[in-house]
Length: 397
Ligand SMILES: Cc1cc2nc3c(=O)[nH]c(=O)nc-3n(C[C@H](O)[C@H](O)[C@H](O)COP(=O)(O)OP(=O)(O)OC[C@H]3O[C@@H](n4cnc5c(N)ncnc54)[C@H](O)[C@@H]3O)c2cc1C
Image 1: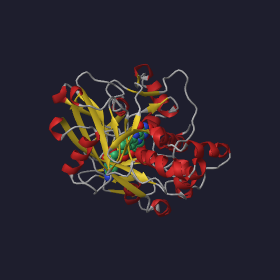
Image 2: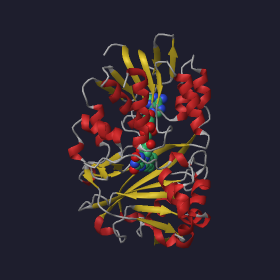
Image 3: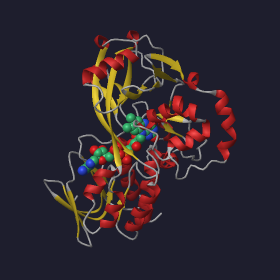
Image 4: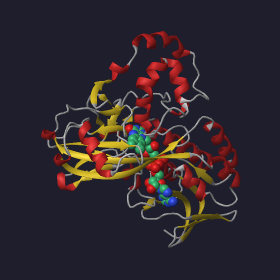
């Protein structure tokens, strides 16, 4: 590939790889630059070769048949037939050092009194605490929902915009409701990256981007590459820092969007060593971790894996290991493998839709695209929906 490229994408998470895929299908030769040595970003099916290739998810774990843009990519790649159904396991609460059923925290009377509001209360402009507190009652919000939402977005949920969680989307009847792949969700980014016409270079941290009115100049430290079109597919703080000169209004629109740092601890145990029955995971109530997600949805004969998503800076590393083992009813001596992953998710606030509208006004008519998990919501499908609309805007639908 020469140093002048049709389209460069920065960031090889699902947003960037989706942007590359959609552009490629519109005939754009596309190069993706990724700072880390691994592609996939928050999609990270961690393999343990020393445990016979056992894997467990350190980030995203579930896709749904309502993920239309993801399914369109899987159609293009011939992968729909390979999706793997997830086994039925449930989440438990982890509260006051004990496991409890989710419904034990539900105040049924309060929830029933709230039912009429389900059809009339608008989400727009409301925070999660405001919307769900009104929808299902304050006690239900305080005792159950806020912890469940925190478990999903791995950060405090109260001030998060309600419209950025659980957007209703049509379901595809020919695909199972909740799925993964036999080797985990990393199957998807790896398959997108492997297709002809698309190149991904890892270990390429983009430090600066110029724009001369015709071409973008992308500096990675070692080289400068040029492209006619550019897509930023990085977290909002990185996008703000990399915004090329000449796009001041775009930079101003997104400056200051928060990012939540998540200290993820992945632990693997022998299946025979754990007393806790198979679970989808744990939703923590006021603890040092927000949630734990297990690999029990795809049982393995030998091992069980868990990703604990910790609040940053609360416990030291050994303290996190002890807390995670306590929550699983075991001890650190039983750990067969462990890994640490730094996850980041956007910390959106109400009024975010207006920021996005300002950004879009600033980008209109330009060859610069900006995508990520910080537009419609954090799900894989939300990210791909943005990547598709930014592709359509510049390369045609
Ligand atoms: C713990 C967890 C569980 C989740 N569970 C689910 C789930 O079950 N289902 C679901 O739908 N969603 C889930 N999500 C959300 C979803 O996985 C993410 O929102 C989505 O994968 C983010 O993709 P992205 O490409 O926008 O960002 P990222 O995955 O963060 O990718 C951004 C990429 O940009 C790279 N980058 C950053 N700076 C630079 C630079 N200067 N130069 C070059 N590259 C750079 C990063 O290294 C990274 O690879 C989960 C997220 C987390 C963290």
